[in-house]
Image (cartoon, rainbow, N blue to C red; front, side, top):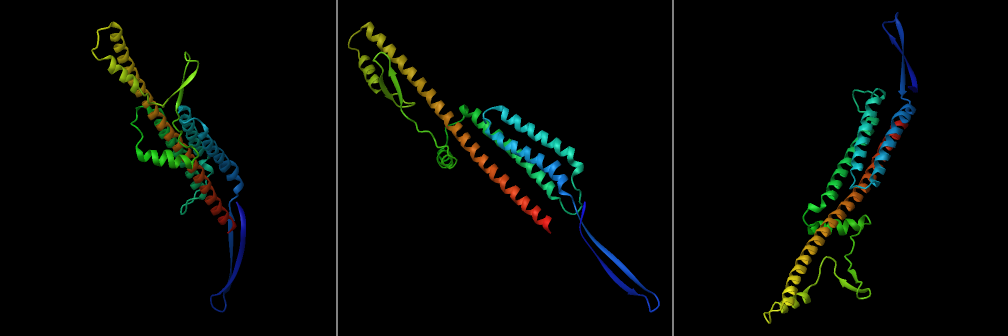
Length: 264
């Protein structure tokens, strides 16, 4: 510790006329040396919270991201146990550096919980129901534009026929229009004549209709999964922005309080 300031006060007291005495009081203000705490405590904590911040760049659907964050929390807990003897101990007030460590640990835990939520949303999106309308409006449209992840437009797919010399046929994505084919199937199903070729065409038409229903169901399921994955990516980027803002705000508040108390 360093002596920040000191002063003394001399007082004279009289116990009768024959026995006066003097009293000298010294007032000393002590200040801790902040270099030890900055080098041994604050800089390692800042490095760990920075690594946790950049871990948002890992793919959220991968389990390595959650295990990486759990390793960071475990390492930070061990670090706090090691440096526990260096922390200041006071009875009346909580030291500001202890508040700083508590905020860093809370941010890491919140980051891990966010990763668990997003990973569950992305991995299990194929088993979810279609995205509700309010989620589509609030997340996919409003929040997507807010974090620069707008919803991808469903453009028409171009299927080229190699037999027809690469002539493109426009078929809407996820919807296959078989109106003409069904009309032909109804015409062929009319009992005009018993021809084996017509019976074979009827069977072929039924098979194609079943294939069409199966493909449409598969495309609809993929679209639902893609919508939920888009919701997960948007929420992940939004929470990353909130995480950055909260870290910056917390550090600014702590530094301002620290500087104010240091200058007093």
